View 1 (cartoon, rainbow, N blue to C red):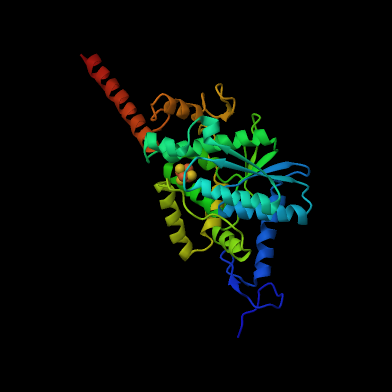
View 2 (cartoon, protein in one colour):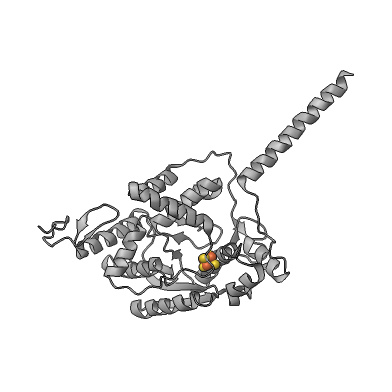
Length: 345
Ligand code: SF4
């Protein structure tokens, strides 16, 4: 006996939703998927009518689905947004050059303006050359820092009001786990925020797919026959995130709600007021948003240009800092005891 769609449309169910385990037909899945994103957008007041919004487009599944759904919802619910695509070309041969072809396809399919900014034009370096110089250990640090700033620069050039990124629920749950494991309370505090930036003249970033499961994004792209690029970056070691991802996938097998549970835990966490918060300001060197002086992008770039690629790399871990603090305290106690002994004579 065929299983009927849970949405009571009368059709046969053809899939099981990973997020809710509901048996649905394709059309009711599309509907539920799109409406959930619409609800996230409206409940969190992500956009205002008349805004110009850049979609950070990499050609991967997340940003391709984001562009598709944003266009659809903008038209269906009259958001009144002007949508444009913003891509960053890190200069990774065999990876980014191919995925940018997919972004160009999105530009044509969705009739959106596209701006591509490259590391080469912004920093005078491609990731291929950076890896040649520094090897494959810290490449993602350079790439991540440069990309964050490149998106800010691109957004400024495009004169947009905000940038929408394709971070999905799995990405956010992984980041919560990673920040807990690293003891990075500053990042833990803000990694579940659906909207970041916006102060100090910076352009806000929003995550409309914050509560959307990765498995459902893949399912949606597959059934909608969306064209996306699925090859992994050739320089992708990022072992730490890989472990967090594998751990999360294992947990998900025994408790499918774990992704939402971790996001919820991250949202409810309260960090003591006495914990130091990074103070956002403007880099005195390049003029872009930063919580240190000069900004990390300027320090890394200087290191590359002066052939000192370790400059700005290798922040001590929390446990090393704690151990150093304990050693210092022990030395003070020993010194005080020695003084007491001396004073006894
Ligand atoms: Fe950049 Fe690392 Fe991502 Fe590759 S895996 S695109 S090098 S951050």
